[in-house]
Image (cartoon, rainbow, N blue to C red):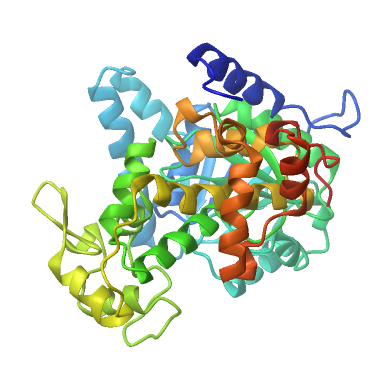
Length: 430
């Protein structure tokens, strides 16, 4: 593929989005489970945002938190979000009240017992999630769908805490959950067909773009993101400054590069004072209270408008820790090192049957991660540059780190001149 037109790219994106709803293997005309009420566990940013999708669609929501303060704070944020939309003329004031009237707050999971669907949206801690699903198994009515919003943890392990693993599924919303279009629906080993079908239909009801994926670390979207982040970090150890990496990704079409994204999310996620992790640059920044935008400094310095400015402090920390000489790597080289591993990882995901089809990978990255639409998604872009070009880079990166060894299917595509978007490994298998 060489220089596809805007019309060709648009047609591909539209077709990919339409295909994502097709789930091969589901019995035709399968009955859906009724979802007339939803329970959300966790009233934080993610839980509140998830809850808004259902309230907006007219579905009553019961939201539970561990403290009244947390519950009140979460519902106040929800009201504020709705009020801002009303103030902008998106709907009348009485609609704000109508939507808020669909919320019920509670401090006890037992009060969710009659809900048709439960979505757990607490922080990423396996022991906590295991505890919650043990409790859900005890209190929830038969036939309720038990969902987790985990972004990377093993849903089979979570489902194993229940006596009804067929009712358990992953519903991975993206932050802010009331805005982002993507919903990764994660089919676990024992998830029942009617649970999958119900959740796919429900995604349409709440105006999401769904992609059905399988259980693996990070699922489809984050697993590919992790590959990009690891290579971006490696570049810093080779003397490339974080803002140079971000600038290359920005020029490619991403609104945020890896280090801009880290500063936005917060560098202290998974970090505590005095901790030594596998990312000593991050550790050193956090020890200086440079934890991202929320503290006014992270990889970047931030002015009063949160505008990122390259930081001499960060540059000094990087030099002290890496000892690397400043690099003159070109933006094109940075793109190859960061983007081609994403393509390779996507191919491995398809080889492992954790995605239904190549276009679903593109749906995930276009709707959840801001992949530039004019590049069509990782698989479509792979066809734009060609399998041989991707293989040449992955041979080099794989020689440095076996984790990035070329996928076998990538080698076959390069030898045959095949296309990434035509890969057929048999679809999703659990």
